[in-house]
Length: 376
Ligand code: MG
Image 1 (cartoon, rainbow, N blue to C red):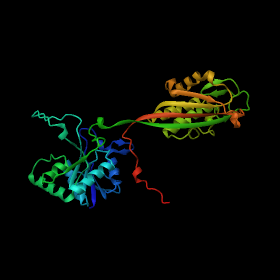
Image 2 (cartoon, rainbow, N blue to C red):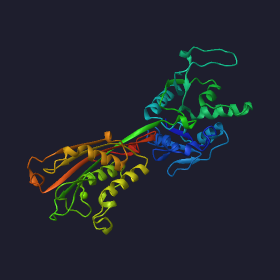
Image 3 (cartoon, helix red, strand yellow):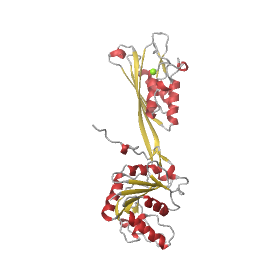
Image 4 (tube, protein in one colour):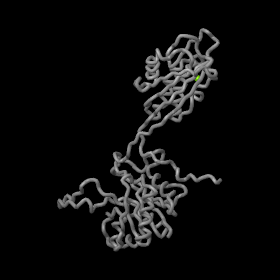
């Protein structure tokens, strides 16, 4: 049997206070999440989108009520079986769709349900039904297209107010028994902003830099924004290799390019410039994208100078520049055991890892289900 999915995305979200289906979730409008999941779901032959426009999908206008929108969607479906889903449930999964589809094919109609966590009470009568008998009903709900249309016709003929909010309720009115399948607690309906799950997304950035010691004996030695005794490093700016690696780790974590892109060594503005400026600006750029700098772990690779006696000072300075607590900056140093150029004392290298985090809503895989393995 051919299978169509009708995704209802016409709702205006009156309880949400704005068009809730249009809000961005992980780079896509909320309504798009369910559509993408159905489009990529095995067993679903066609997706009909109600109330939104999307190239490549069959799109129809929504109606004034949910029943009207569902009618327009089901009428546009060509499959013998229809799965009707509310786009306000963006976290629907292939597993759940498959459970509903299999039960629909086997029994004629099916819906997902989850046991309510709260006691449910019928306020007017004070009746409290046993919780074990109750199910909170989700979508998608499945049935034969012809049955749904017949139930809809009977419903219209009855002249009742359009209060049916559920397709199972509609088709059971013509004597069809829908079977429940296990729903999914994560398949929640977004009704108010509080329903949006907030997660912390964490990213890691790495940075590496190396500079040779200068031939100019008067060049000052800057490391981690702190002035050290001895001859400095050669480079376009103050050549603070440690701060340059911090900049690259921050930019890398936020996906904002690298230090060479932002501060090219061909630009006279950066000649002799203090690298403090690069770190301040990189931290600002990263924070502007909503990231919090959680931690910086730095390792200096050098035969000289001795870093350890001034470790706290350097940690403090890096922490100041990116505006985090010094406890969130780790600083280590190692020699290169006299191996290679660093081991011969010709220069200094630095490795830095930065951890960034930002609150995000509903991190989902991005079109990953469209990827197909390369032919070998
Ligand atoms: Mg550099």
